Amino acid sequence: MENNIKGNFMKCNYIDIIRKNPVIETNRLLLRKFNIKDKEAVLAYGSDKQTLKYLVWTGITDPAEAEKVITVYYSKPGVYALELKKSNQCIGCIDIRIEPQHEKASFGYMLNREFWNHGYMTEALKAILELCFTKLELNRVEASHYVGNEGSGRVMQKSGMRFEGISVQEVKIKGIFQDVVHYGITRAQWNEMMK
View (cartoon, rainbow, N blue to C red):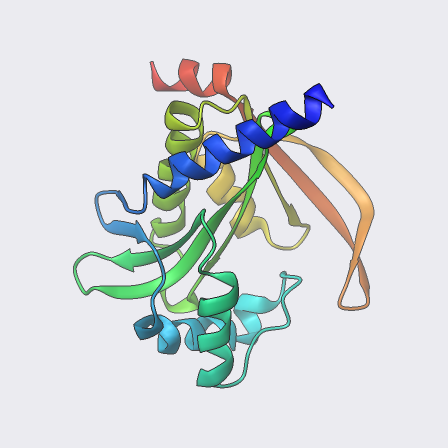
C-alpha cells in the first residue's frame, strides 16, 4: 500500500513538472503543445509510409484523423510538437513516457521526412534529456529502435545515450518479428557528459 501511495504521489509530481514546462526552447526549435492548426503537419508525417516504416503506428489518411490524433493522443502531458522557430512550422513530435516507480522514462519521436538529417531530432532529444535529468530528476532514460532504423540510433548516440544491446526478434510489428536495439543513459552519466 505504501509503495502505491508513493508511486501515485511521484506520478503527480512528474506530471505537475511537465505541465509547468509546456514550452522548451532550443537553438532552432520550440517544443510546445500541439494545437488544431498542426493537423496538416500531423497528416504530412502521419501518412508518410517511409516515416511510419519502423513504427507500431499504422498512420492516418485524412485531416479528420489528424485532428483526432491531436485532440485524443497529442493533448496529454509530456507530448511536444516540434516547431521550427524560423518558420513556425510543426515538423514532428516527441513524447516522454515516465515510469514513476523506477524513476525512469522512455520516449518516442517522429519527424517529417523532409527534415531528416538536419540534426533537429538530436536537438529535441537533448532538450528532453535535460528536462528529464534536471527538472524531473529521473535516474534513467532509455529508448530503443528496430534494426534497420539506424538513423534513430544515431540520434540517441549523438544525444549521449549508450548502446546497451540487441534483443533478437523481441517484438512482432506489422506481422514481422523485429530485432530491437536498446540505448540508455543514467543521470550520473548525463552529469558526467555535461561537465
